[in-house]
Length: 133
Length: 142
Image (cartoon, rainbow over all chains, first blue to last red; front, side, top):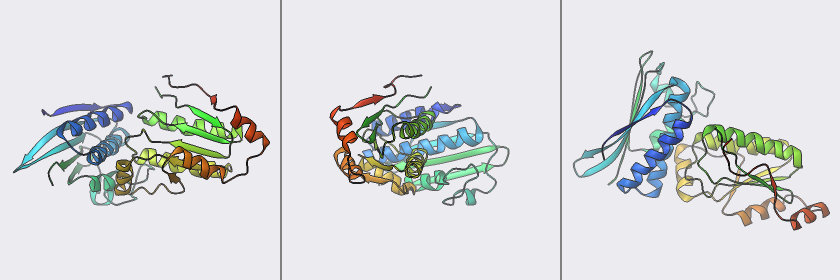
């Protein structure tokens, strides 16, 4: 699968991202539970971009590591950034009036989770779920 | 842009079958519609069927908890029915507890649970015999 980029510019794009991620996960042979995990992660992280950064994108692609194949999602924006990513990864922490489950919950739903953020520059969240574990 | 989700009144229960992937606007509109229907009809229970939902994220999870809390204040009980196993697994891992929301496996169990909450009076039996009464419009984009 070639990697593809989906623009996240309005609230309805969250649903588009969900559908694209589920289709990609199903196409790679992920189980229904894994498809649901990845779709939910896409929903949470895409919503974060719309809510905090207004616009950004998600890049859906595959990664290969030895004998393992995985689905990788990269969520990028040029928004305000996160001042303290350690704090943002804590359950219940929110600056947006939400439940504070989006980032920490998403980390629990994938195998690899990396967050890079620079204030006033933007944020990139990279997640991978491996097919053979 | 929001999709209209039907709300059916069966006796004194509002039945809400969610059969489409909801965007955020639809989720918020549904929350409003359920509360308005509760007030308009005096229903005592809300049954939300999510058996066709392939994902419940923190936004939808929060809506379900909020509806249950608001309905309780309006003297009605909320039951969520038909959650897919994969959705339940994901919800727990995400860290959502759906506080205050009762969940059961299917619509029959949901109706039983809600009916146990209040005694059916004559009015109830009458409207139940009439079958489903539609309130609001069915699926169409507005």
